[in-house]
Image (tube, rainbow, N blue to C red; front, side):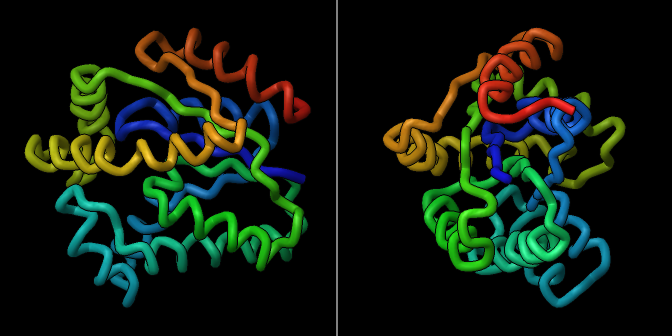
Length: 199
């Protein structure tokens, strides 16, 4: 049992690649962005608080993000889920530190982080991909150009500290995400198959 992390800007194609790796390796996923949007959709207490920040392109409050993530971790631990793939999390250094603590406290050494994949994508390509995604997603944060710009700005302002942490730990791997889906998949797969067995 172990875990893998996908990080990268919004619109980098993490979700597309995630689906392929779930199929290939049988990962169970933790996608905080999706979990939080579900809370917003259901109008839960957490969702109402999240709505004030997420739809403006800002990061969700740290405590709320961790609450959603920990709930899923406990579910997987209790279900003896084998391997976990975190998609788009952590996004800031506080989350990176907190997820280490949560994994130890809640799961012992069940889900040690084996590798972190950083999908590097140029900002102009990110904007183009988000615009395309908006045609099918209907997500509020995919539609407004000002929100998209803010999300990219927030990402760059926060992610460098996360990258530095994982680089120092020797588990960060860079993937050029500017290419087509297949070439990006092959790059990431050449890394992930060193740590996980395919189905």
